[in-house]
Length: 194
Image (cartoon, rainbow, N blue to C red; front, side):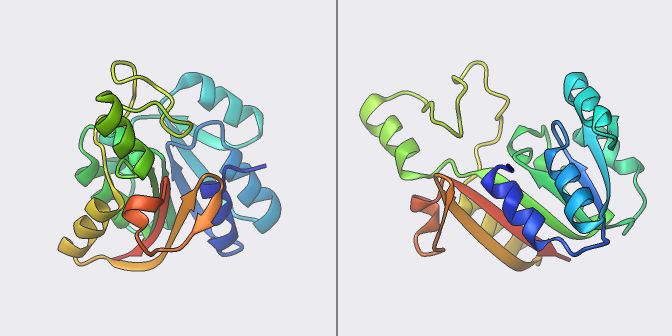
C-alpha cells in the first residue's frame, strides 16, 4: 500500500507516461506506476540501500543527488517529474524545482507542511522543534533543512508564474479541503506546469 501522497500521484499520472521520480526511495511509487499503468518509470535516489531495494524490484534507478545531478537530464525528457518529500531536504530547493519543471512537462511536488497546527502548538507550548508522525526526527538529526509551508509554496510558484493544475492536502492519511490548508494540512501535493 502506498503512502497517501504517493497514492494521489499514482492515481493522477496518465497511463503509459514517462516518469522521473527524484528521491524515489525504495521505488514503491515507480513499481505501482509500472504495474498498474504501464508507466516507463526512472528514478534518482541518494541512499545506496534504497537504490538496491528499487533495483531488486526490477526498476531503473540510479544513485545520485538532486542538488547536483538533475542538470544532466535533457529538457522535457519526461511527461512527469516527481519530487515527493524531498524538496525540504535539498540544499537549493529553488534550483532543484527549476530543473524539475525543465525536465518534466508536468511536475508533482509533495512536502510536509511545517505550518500545521500541531507543529505550531509544539513550538508555542513546548518551545521545542516538533517531532510528529510525518516529521519523526529531532532537530539535530533531521534531513529537513528548509521548512516550507503550504502558503510559502503557493507564493513561490505564483512568483515564478507556474500554473498549479492540482493541489491535494492531507491531514493524517485522509484528504482535507484546501480551506485553511496552511493551518490544517500536515502534507501537501501539488501538480504543476510551466
